[in-house]
Length: 365
Image 1 (cartoon, rainbow, N blue to C red):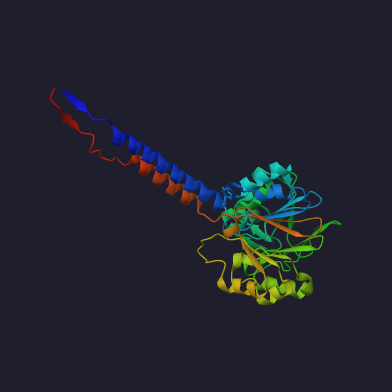
Image 2 (cartoon, one colour):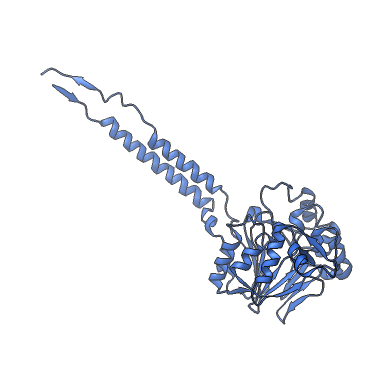
């Protein structure tokens, strides 16, 4: 007669697998919560924080590029730049979530600071997705504009397809007025002022200097937004405005390039906070060490979208500056944590262990 031993070892091993799985999952959730993992899913975390305040400004994380959304106290909205075309999973979802929560229907003012792809890359898609009422664009013509309208004022021409698509989409936008960016343009009422401090000239040899430097003032708080403006543009505004350049927040020029954010400029601005819109890894190694050093020398607290995600700010009823970030509390690499956890669970349940005790034995009757 043949008898089989009970599968005691097999039963015990299932229990061991279950216990190990529970330990792995416990470790995952403990690391997840202690590491601020929930913030990973709060793409527009600041929306709920600032909806009750009449003013807010969002430095949207679009990687190496710029996109800044402003809700003004008169309920008008402004979007300055549209980030690179690669920002599919950040810009439009962020705006859609924000608009949905705050019942925003359109963009009143869209600014293209200059023709570089990391600033106008999503321009056409923004115009396709939202009603835009006013567009402010540089005195740089796109190639199709020149073909259709000519170039009677001898403005500079950009031949890039990205800029051409963005500008031609403006002409297709219904009920949209087109304005050139230049010193003296103002939007204001008793509560706020948005003033273009530059550009002064019609033609620049360096395309970055077409970027308008825009001072946004709410109550007594000031935000200086610089696009990719370099030292030439900085000198222009220093000569024209000098002591009026002081700002609580500086959007650092050209993603922290060493050709922007000169010490002379910083000595006038004296920012409390310096926001750098940049990706963690980029071919230019932005922000540059020299630029970071100059910011630290004037006492500016540096806030980078590469580390904090989207950065939103507002001002409360006591004129205090409020700041919220979408990923500022994340201390873990969440995708890596998930991968490690899944692989470990697969190993625990997938590896076959030979049960040497489970052998068929012979026993005589």
